[in-house]
Amino acid sequence: MDQSLTKDAFFSPYQDQSPKKLSYYDCSSGYSTPYKFLQGSPEDRGKQPVEMPMNAEETALLRFNLSNSMDDIELKNIQLQFPNARRFSGEAAVTEVRVRTDRGDIVVAVQGYRSKPAIITYHDLGLNHVCFQPFFNYVDMRGLLENFCVYHVNAPGQEDGAPSLPEDYVFPTMDELANQLNYVLGHFGIRSFIGFGVGAGANILARFALVHPQKVDALVLINCSSSTAGWIEWAYQKLNARTLRNRGLTQGVLDYLMWHHFGRNPEERSHDLTQVYRMHFSRNVNPSNLAMFIEAYVRRSDLGITRDSDTLKVPVLNITGALSPHVDDTVTFNGRLNPNNSTWMKISDSAMVLEEQPAKLSEAFRLFLQGEGYVAPLSPTKMSGSRTEGSRRRPCRHSPVIRITENPISEALVC
Image (cartoon, rainbow, N blue to C red):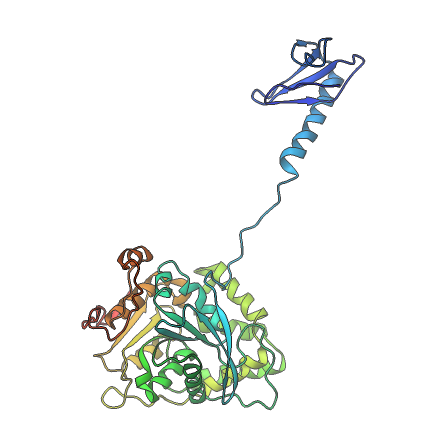
């Protein structure tokens, strides 16, 4: 039977003894009303409703049919969705390149255009290049990626999904890891770079700058240690390395890695963040490869620098978090640097400043770059407004137009 329905209405197919009886449901009012269609031509049917009474059975059946209809329309196409879990990976495209060195291949993740000035990052224990991506994809840092190319260097066997290094493989020492950067520079044709390192990676970049100061424009070092490992650190790290080799990543090793990066009671500051890192250590780290890296770091030699004689000749931004277990190491390191070209900064309410205080760290980094003569606008909006239309302006540290002689953060800061 052809039946024309009015707007905003659902009709139940229920029919009783009267073959022309249907029920009408008004969406706007939420009430159902029975209708009987008059006899007539197919074109006229349904256009002249007449109200008819309904019994209890018909009303119950109508409600049942309506609930099924609403279920079909509104509920069956709804899927329960959860917000995406926080991950290390960021939005910007990253290309992984294998670079051959004298101690085997290493993976370098390139982020940005290679024709632009270089920033080389180096990670800490238990991490790899992926830990830097959230920071460099932070909203205040995205503008820098338009003016720089970031090369994230991974220590041997530390990248995600890395196979176990051969049993006879001799892991490089800290000095040898620093020397591997020469192969990275040669592979990509980099003449000089800005170093950005955390923990063990900061120590490696500092060693490279001591030997090759002409290849380093500036250094941003987070939780950098300039001395040898103490007895307590040596004992803990030796135990961790042995456990990783024999038993894998145990709860004890995991707790130590969390303390190394976040200090005490990190769950009280950011439960979600610490869970992400616990999951990363448990799933993405090769235990035997990490054991080799830990042993190389715990056997590190002293940098051998003093403020009065041999010290780093390049500008250094020395950063730590107020809650970090490595604050004393950065204080010792700061006492061995030239105060004319170094700045010590302690960022409050954080231990892992890359994750916990990206806004403060990005602001300090941009100001530091401006002090070294680079174009480092305060926001992507200001950067886009300052561009010259139709021209390709490349920031250059030695350009007399943009050279800034006064460092805006020349004194120690506590943020």
